[in-house]
Each structure stands twice: as structure tokens, then as C-alpha cells.
Amino acid sequence: MAKREKTLQKMKANPKDWRIEQLETLAEQYGVAVRKTGGSHVVFDHDDWVELLCVPAHRPIKPVYIKRFVALIERLEVDDEDA
Image (cartoon, rainbow, N blue to C red; front, side, top):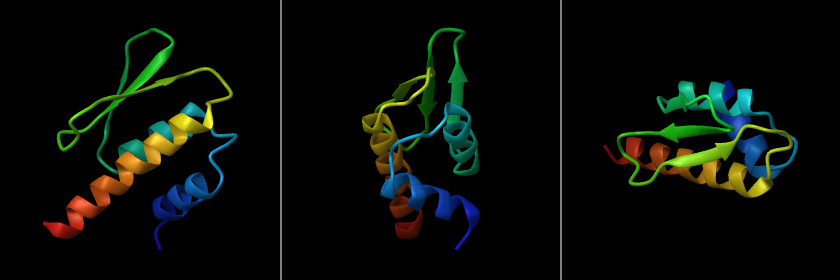
């Protein structure tokens, strides 16, 4: 199991106490575009996603955003396996 997969599993098991930098790093490892517009949110985007994910960049990141992020990354993994 790769480090990125271990990190994703840790996020899934415990969606509390994550930093925005960790989400950005994981997103880049999965090929997800990270946009910082200079505001208070970071936007995650991928060509295979219909919607964007906007996450407030302040700490602590609420667990609901981590759960959404994990779900979108897992959807990418499933799409990669089907291809």
C-alpha cells in the first residue's frame, strides 16, 4: 500500500485534525488541481468530477470537508480501476 493510500485511509478513519497542506499534498498525488484564489478557501478540481470542492483554509478543518474530500478521491480510484 502506497503512502498516499495510507494517508487516505487515516483520513477516512479519523476525519479530525487535518491541515489544508496535507489535503493539498494528497490532492496533487492523485492528480487533482489545487487552486488558491487568495481568499479563505482552497478549491480542489479534477476533470472527472462534476462538482468542485471548496474547503476553508483555516484550522481546524471540519470533518465534513475531510469526508467529502475522501469520497471524491475514492471516486477517482474507482474510475481508474474501471478504465
